[in-house]
Amino acid sequence: MTDMTRDLFAEQPYGKIALAKMGAVPENFRLYQAGWLGNKPEEWTVMKVIGAEFRAAKSGPNKGKLTIPVEGTTRTAFVTAEEIEAAPRKH
Figure 1 (cartoon, rainbow, N blue to C red):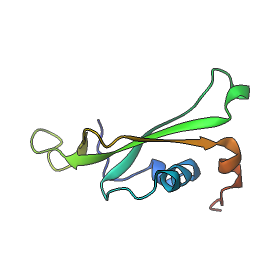
Figure 2 (tube, rainbow, N blue to C red):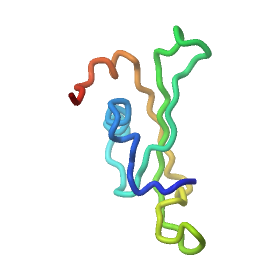
Figure 3 (cartoon, rainbow, N blue to C red):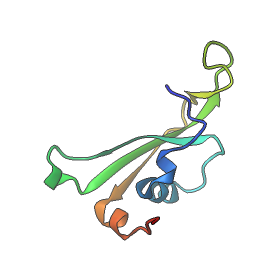
Figure 4 (tube, helix red, strand yellow):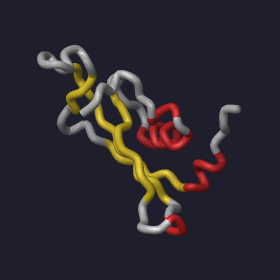
């Protein structure tokens, strides 16, 4: 997995909503997967967002970077298109 030091998904409206639904998470918790459910754009009304706690690699080329997902810490939230539309936006 890539370096998860910066939680890019958490900066997006869907990420903020998902994290709020997940409740309190550890400091090293990162969202790492998000996608619309359904096969066609007209079916895309719910997004599945997945995150987990990560730890730093102890050796190798990623030593010191948050790249190792911690087993048993995965959480999933479902975010609707309506929730995303209603979220405040940066201008």
